[in-house]
Image (cartoon, rainbow, N blue to C red):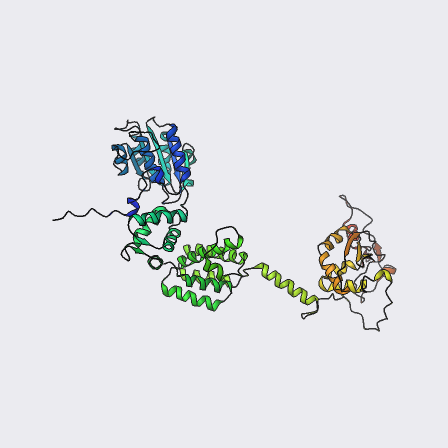
Length: 549
């Protein structure tokens, strides 16, 4: 009878790194630790932080082997001596691993660490305590551990690992050398998976490897686990379709269709694609994540800030702007948050996507349309008349024949000052009203020199100088310069818009009343407010005081 085959070992454990040179995606951490071991500059406590599956606990075991190897401390443990072999299979008496997620209390810390820390190592050079998920310890457990971490015996080294370093008290973290582990890049994950697949005789497509690498979200352990799961589907052959089918990834045609419907503001098309998503059984959160990942590549390509996006996606959205894509990506993030806390994922998905159709994706495009409409209105090509309307319209009377303009009031090619001001007012009412009180003269080249009384008015006009020159060019039939300067004089009697139905009391106060000039006196803090108003608007401010009845 043949011997029973050894139990199957999952790929994540089979290909767990056993030396610093085998660590994937953490060059800074591995190099720093190797240099410290080579120089014999060892710290009594280390704190490894970073996301799940990126190598924190693995590195802690490699460091323990490097400290206790028969050749050590060494940056290259031999993996052959008794100490290295025992640490590899987690059976060393001098390397104790404590899972803080299941041993959170002060009694656990006291029994595993405090009561044994003073004992000498059973055989090896150092007694190493590896505390995984350190942030799960209770406050009392941290307090009990503090003194030991601060001043441990010379033969003790602590290695703390955590995914949530902000939950570790500063009193603990400040006494450790801190190493930050980063998520493994998708390209590095794909290359490592390809090496494992070659060793295991797994036939895998390059596109499938890329999809598995993105799905792992920087976790090497998760990426290897996904590959291990896929190999069982089709006799060791892993394809893109296999990966999509197993893990519920959204088919690309659905993502493209939904993205096109969103950017085209087409609710009917979006509803059709969402129905297909539901029929295929794709999770709403997974659908949004896949759509976000695909559009993110196009967005970065539009900005010129990243690698070229997938060729299919780049060709599908040639006219999409970065602003529109940015709006959609922010909306996807908000909808994913609502999916986490809502009780109806389907409703949250529909509200998030359909409400995006009602919002302006690209404000730049809207501004361009408004400017085009403004030009059409100014040119008289449809639209309401936006010329200024006087406050009081007197009874119609025969209009007198306008006098011939003087040479100083006619710009090059014949446009008069009055025609110019009227044309400006049709486009910008307030600017046209300001020009009515300005001095003007014809330049030698035929343009206008406009002189303002107040610097404020001149500064406001400078912002519209291009518009003024465009208006004058439209009247003259050729390009002319409009110069804006100070030096104008205020009109002797400012033009006032009044209601002629109210009698003008300028000849004196009405019978039984008297005028009081309220600008004669000054407030304690400075000129009277009405005096300031006179300086801005011109004229004279007076109050009519009626006698008591």
